[in-house]
Image (tube, rainbow, N blue to C red; front, side, top):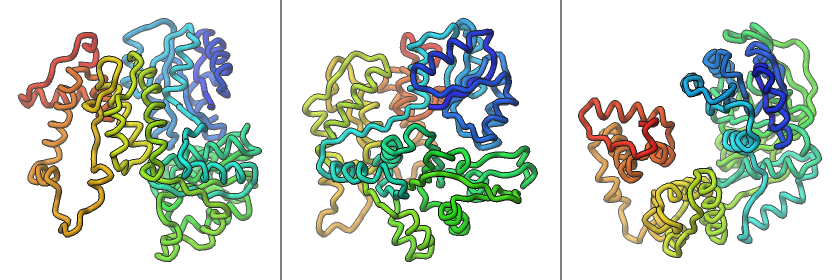
Length: 451
C-alpha cells in the first residue's frame, strides 16, 4: 500500500510515517498540495493520501477529481479538534485522524480506507482447479485473462497472481476501463503532455509508466472502445507507449493482466473487440466460477464475513444460526461473492444477541429453485414487481430509506451502511422528507450527531 503524506503536521509526520511503514505501507512525504499533485502526476502513485487538516483540503479534493486521481483522502491534525474534523469531512476527506498518532488507529484507518488482500478463501473443488492453474502461471511473464461474472472476485485473483509473481514486491496498478470516459481513457493509460488537450494543465504520467517494473491490471477490458484497442495492442506488443501530445516513445516493463465479465470471443465475432488483441491478452485464461457453482464455499465465506464485520463495527462476536445458513445456501447469488458479503454485513448490523437468525438475512432476487422458470410460465412479472408499477422512483426510495431506518431503530449509521450511502446523503434525504411532512424515525441514543 502506497501512502502519500502532505504537510509537516508540526513534527508528528515522522511518527505517523514510521507506524505506517511498520504496517507494510510505502510512504512518501511532501510539504504542500502543489508538491503532492506534482508527485502524483509524475507517476509515483498513491493508494491513500494523508493531509494536514490545516491545509486546504477542499482544493486538494477538487484538484484530484479534475485530474482523475481516484484516491481516498484522510485528514489528520494535532488533538481531537471536533470542528476541524467536521470541516475536513465536509470538504471530502474520508476520515479524520487525531495526532499524536495511535498505532492501532492508523492501522485501522489504513485497513478501512484501502483494504487490499491477495488471500482467497475456498474449499469447493471448482475453485481448487482455478487456483491450481493460477499457481502454475503466476511466476511467468505471460498475459492472463481472468473471466467471470460480476462479483466473483476477478480483481482479487489478479492481486493473487501479482503477489505470487516475480514482480510481487513491485507495484500493481489497476485501471477500470468501464469507469473512465472514452475520451479520457487514452490519457489515463498512456499519460499526456502539458497542453495536449483542454484541461491538460501539466505533464502527467499514465498507468503504463506508473506500473513500470510491476503489473498493470486492465479491469473490464471488454468495455474499451475498439479504436483505443489498436493503441493498447501496440503498447503490449512493443512494450512502448506514446503520451498524448508527446513526440518520443517511452519504453515500459510491465506484465499485463486483464479481466472481463463478458464472453470476449462473442465480442470478437460481433466486431466489438479486436481479435489480435484478444489473442495477445489470452495467453492464459482463468475462469472464476459463479458462487452458485461453488456451493461449498458459501458457508466458509459467510463465516469469514461475519467475523470481519463484527470486528469492523465493534459488535459482540456472533455466529450464523442453522436457519440463517440454510437461507444463504438456498439463494441464487446473482451478485456472487460481493452480494454475499453485503448480505452478511447487513445481517451483522441487524442481528441482536450472539446469534444471527434468518430474520436478519435480507435477500434480493430469487432462491435457486425460484430462479429456474417453471414449465408453462409465460414470463409475467412477479407479484413484487407488479406492486412497484405505477410508483415513482422517488417514492420507492423514500419508503426503502424510512423502512430501513425503522428496522435499525433510528440508528443512522447502521441504516446508511445497509443502504450503501453516506451519512451525509442519508441526513439530506431525511431532512427533505421531514420538510415534506413525512414522519422520520428519531435518532437512537448515542447517534445524535448523525441525525
